[in-house]
Length: 295
Image 1 (cartoon, rainbow, N blue to C red):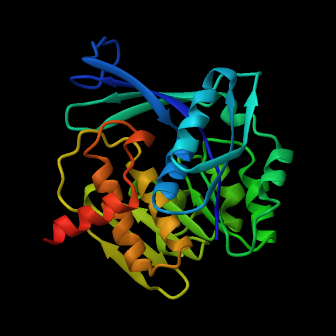
Image 2 (image 1 turned 135 degrees about the vertical axis):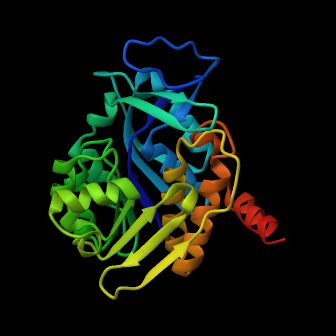
């Protein structure tokens, strides 16, 4: 099986600050660094490092071609990442406090210039049972989701950054909705239903240091895995790491409980490292981490 990810590719800029600035305040950063990021790229790297065959669908500007090399180095197929001259590569400004918490400002750039024809071409080889991952940092989500459903693919949607209109447009073609606790409430409020009545077969809610919960909304089955206690240094990309590992594990046919355990462990391990995509662990590192915790 394979995972196709219509996702953002960003150049991340990290600034370590003593605290987040308030209105009118200037704060001096103690350190600055850059690297590969974007919810889509992070999820693709996570899924590839978890052992899945991953094809990324997206676009970068001419100055961001190096990001595709980083994706390739992580094991991601970038055949369908276009190079656009009309805009710069998407980028993110990430401010990180000493406890690892962050605040992020993103500029979409080429992530919003993906062509419908490129999406159709990328999904042409997809088979029934393959997975399509989507987030809210690109265009073409609705067209991609509908095409994926016609091909019998499994559609996984991360409703972030939260956008009411985007959720309403794509939700009917979603098989698995992946959100954090706040986003789950936002989606439910936007659709006027209880969280457990959302119109999707499966719901995955991450709860940060409290772990994550998977819901089968058709049968009422619920599974929860608590997160191990770690000392976070950078929480950027933790949710993306979780989503990538969960989808890769499902793609490999593992039981949902094991998928959940692996995803929580990978996200927990990621937050102990600085950076986003480059800091995402491999499956071997994640299993070793679980074994260490058990021991």
